[in-house]
Length: 371
Image (tube, rainbow, N blue to C red):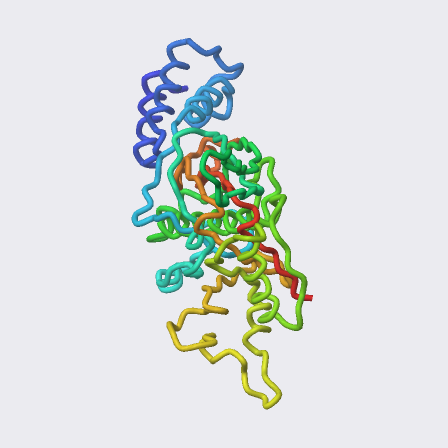
């Protein structure tokens, strides 16, 4: 049977060979066991490996120390305040180095596919210094302005508001990856960071439109008081009538819309509308008149995203109707302090940010029905 000194020397040798990141924790645990701070095992220990097989105290000591290891922040170069137009993130399987069998096929050289124009491009984004805000939502007004005779009482006007208190919401996800994959696959860490950030942007777009409150933001389409336009002949005419509805939201005044959100299927339907001679009503670059080549309808930029249901559109004065308040920007971190992942050489790569959507003028938005 080995002496205590021989066992400790063997442990140090094995740790050095393995290159384990938590090797110092292992050595300290064995030293504590040898010093008698843990009960001795029932049977004599002959090798360093038997220490971990025979003594639960040593394993528990190492596990608890690993659990207190703080997450390692992962920098995200070039990340901006943009959000994507897409479906909510789906659960992913554990990524292992076997998923990337050779240097020639380990990763695509191109970035993860993303859409370039998102709802964040329509809504003002501002920083927030507190996790909750209270604001006045304007639901109507009374304009009594008029001519007044000398010495007469002035007419009184009024603004109808609703007090709204809201707190920031956390949008987050994580994905398990093996340490071997992170070491063996060049660029995998940066690639995962990019993809996870994009998944959050997908969810952000969905919540800006459809969020139901609670743990989600309350989306524009779920906000009480927004206008609605019924279907009128086709998509093009429906959008035009919605513009008029916004411009007369308060009868004698309203809003000039700044953007239109459509499902890709509805945008396809609009672009394929023809006149009686078979000519497309919209030009091939989606312009009803001369101008820029951006997708536009009735001079408004069109954001196409599957985040809005087919058969529904959203027209809005996004520039003044709402603000997206950012409390904590995108944060990426990784750690093995999860369940038994330290023993399995797994790490969790986590991405999250916190923000809230404030809708100041519900009547600055109009939901469109295309059937």
